[in-house]
Amino acid sequence: MNETLSLRFIAQFNLLDKYLEDVLSDCDNHTNFVHKIRQISQGEYSISQIVHQYYYELNTLSNVRNQLVHTIGQDQLEYLTPTTHALDQLMMISMLIMKPLSAVDVYAKPVINCRTDQTILEVIQIMVEHDFSHIPTINHNQYSMTLSQHHLFSIIAQYDNAREMLVKDFTQIDDQSVARFGPQHSSLDVEYHILTHMNAVAYLSQSGLPSAEILGIVTEHDLVEHADLGLQHQIQSV
Image (tube, rainbow, N blue to C red; front, side, top):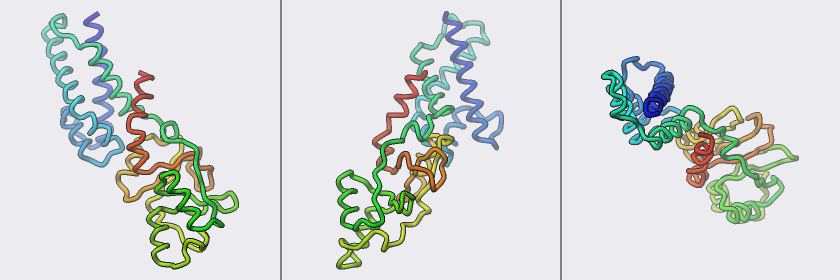
């Protein structure tokens, strides 16, 4: 029983170690595990955030693995065995890193739009009511542009009658901060985009195309709100 638990732990750890090695494509095959997680957590990889979050747990699990390998070499497995909690922890973290949920699974939610024929005041009221930082605008059932609170308040500051002016009278915000993701993208892809772009917005759809129906909108506020959601789903699947 103990030997089986130990071998399962080592096998799972080796799978994770190989995955991190593939992420660091230019990594030396002899680079140790702790150096890999340090390099990834300090880098700009899609899994950097999750590796940084579990850095100390991964370090501890690495020590367990090293001790197990040492005891195997001395044929002393009966003297050291990982707890079921340690194996469960390793499985859970491995799942989060190697098989993250899709962005749509984690962040899809009903989307509230505004129309280009609505007034600036009406749009601000919608955003304040729902605590939105950004909102998509629709023209004849087609996506038109994205508005932010910052953009709207700057319009009000510039024009005396801005509250009565229509959305279609203004241009869109800088679309460099807007990205589109489909079911082929993981939640980590979305989170990486949000964290590496100022005032970033991520639109989710079944195709990731601009013309597709928006299934969810993700901003930095959503990352905080959903911090544990992906983890809960992954634990249930372990």
